[in-house]
Length: 204
Image 1 (cartoon, rainbow, N blue to C red):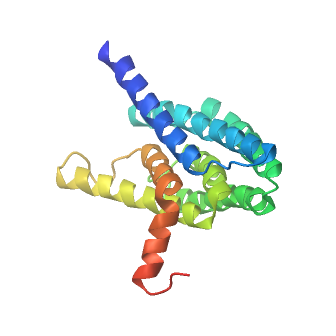
Image 2 (spheres, rainbow, N blue to C red):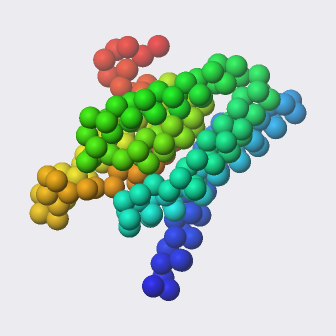
Image 3 (cartoon, rainbow, N blue to C red):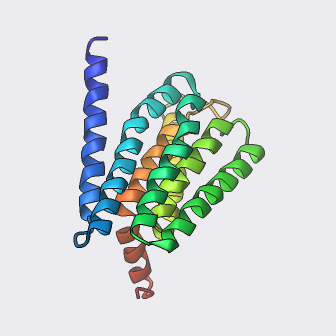
């Protein structure tokens, strides 16, 4: 049991390192406005990194995504991401961010209604938060993040079925795979989309 907090700390630090790497890759040097926008954006993704671990662990243990973490994240994420876009005068991101949150909320809501055993409304609320972060980055990141969640979750479910550790009626937590998919979209959404388009000769 004593090793568990150390493992959690290690995961948090790892995700924080990813967030820092990502933010530095997007770092906008130049005038004070772009520098300030980069700092605020870094704070937003560090926040997402920090809440990723408890959300994933809680969902794995009790099959629940707690409102006490998810709901404040709408305010924190929206304020930080919206602030970064406004400071940088990136009005497109300011529009796509809430649109992305709404889009993922609606998609996951439809899935939850159609398959209540496969997805809970905690996942739906989490989808809205992740949509804000992915939408802030752009449509490619939003699409890859959503697709990766279903891909990873589906592969995990298949693995459990093959290993006979779950049945068709078993409840499988989806939150961890939503979070993993979101990070895949955040860090690799743009290059994956470019590679996919290039594969079919559609690269711009």
